Length: 236
Image (tube, rainbow, N blue to C red; front, side, top):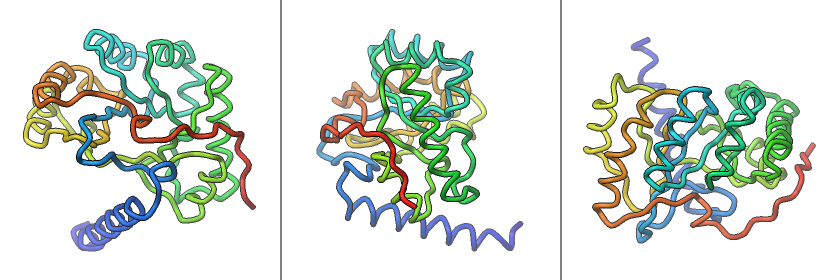
């Protein structure tokens, strides 16, 4: 395992370079990793839900704090808990496509990739009456062809530039300590997950800190134009 560490570090560095390059070259309506540093907004995003326990609790706290967030939903979980998906939308939050099964993008064929996007898109439309055009790939990874296919489905790729790594934290205090040392800045898209309790529990402290620094919460739409919501037409 130790022998693989230099290779893994190099691959991680190359991915970061590729992400920064794409972010600099492409318009935000195609590839969004964050907003301008001059922005006074922070976007909270939550991946991998909906969860039958943690997502409703997170929604309770978001509502109490008056914060709007974005949920990137896994299709098969959305199918299992449609009432939670509807609640997310009714309470004013944004939803995004996080594929149907959360399989690693590199393990999918071209046909499978498009099916994952289309299946989730159709399910979210059926449940909410709203077609999502915000797409986040599992692990934030895409092949060049998948990038083109996502665009052919009229999806905007939404990644992040602030990873709270809440999945690796051992407690709420552990997560809070990390966010205090590396607080979100204006223009940040913060990655968290609504599949564990720590994100919900840390929100009051995070909200106080963000607002104390003169920032507010928003969804990625604050940095995007009005995008055309068209049906997916995969390339071949």
